[in-house]
Length: 575
Image (cartoon, rainbow, N blue to C red; front, side, top):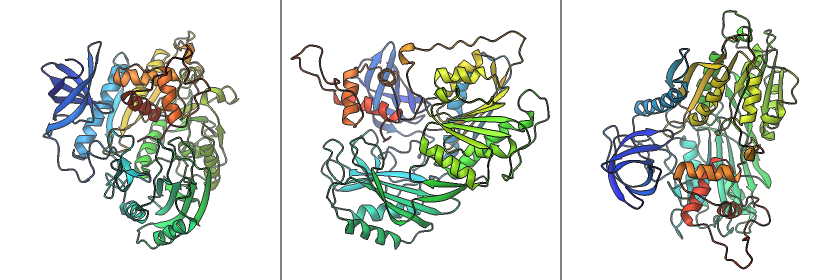
């Protein structure tokens, strides 16, 4: 097997998140976006150190597990991966992926632990409460499209008129908006020209309130009258939900991110309300909130069950009891709970009725402000939310926790922050992860420093996609009386990495590309692509060491890999 070979093989298994192991007479190859049992033809793109990676060319035979997809856009749209599998088969696949990863790190644990399988999403379809649709064209020079990025493409947009992971109201709004603006210009990401950029829709499952935002540039392609007319016609649509607000957001950033330079309220208000496990949350267009409301209730109820009775936390031996349901006063447990990477404070507020005090730490200031307002809205006065890096904030907090809840971003916990968390020496902690590969990396450090896993379960928050949540309960092994020395290897060249969404060092980007494609990319190429995306790169990013030498441009294939890394680290919008 060598680079450029076109081969045919059978997909034997799919590892998290979407890496198919294809078996051929010439050897095994990793190919993404395939299903177990499929017979496929692929081209070998990389072969290094005995590991080969390929790109799917064609599916020759379907898997015997496949059925007809309920979505006409499946395969073309880059959103869903498992729509042609029965839901129970998809659950089993995700469960096996998580179990395999956990086994890889827990095989040396002497204390028995319990894997509790996977919990299904209460809603299989129409489960999303937020969508960011992009304007563009399906092919170069084609008519206006509005929807999701085509699988494997950074530029082509598929109009997902019949998307199955959102409800009819989303589809009506999308269809009307695309047709209404037909003939208008969309924002070209390379030329930085055009008007229409994104359509954001958020809808509360419990209250039915809808928030709609049209994102455009300030370029004079259409006047205020056209946008106001769009708003008026939009309000005439028959929908099951109730429109709480319609916004017009101006975004002139060259970066491919959804942000606001200015926001005009065309109708109603710039927020809506949603309910979760008896609590009420005020949500703005950019507020973080779990995209599957009913699935989030399953996830957080699981975490609350794992936490148990806070009176049993710490070093007491009381029998664990369920948490109280009322949220009108602080708890009498006398316990302090840290909710690290707290987002809008959902978990913190669920814990507040049983705790003396809950401290949430989150780097996104808007999320922290929302958490404070929501706690006040729910009558919870024992919650404190702090904006900042967990790594830095832990040095400033005077209180010591009796219990810690971790819900970090996809890349997991910074090694230095992990060291500080372990040094608190709490008896129990709960780790919620949206990326099991990052989870097992962090679990290895916990195990090396006196913790064991008691229970673990996967939760399907994102049906039909490759993503899955995992909830783990860890406890500290009984001390033998000897002091514990915590040793964590940290690459000092990366020690200044900030623990936040939307940041990655050049080395992290290079490592990501190498891990996924076994391809080296230079600092120069990364800087060129960051510049294209409107990200800061410094003054000398495109200069050679020798005056007069021609600066090489990043090849298209490597640009695709670097953009994927930037998406992964949240530096540009995920496609």
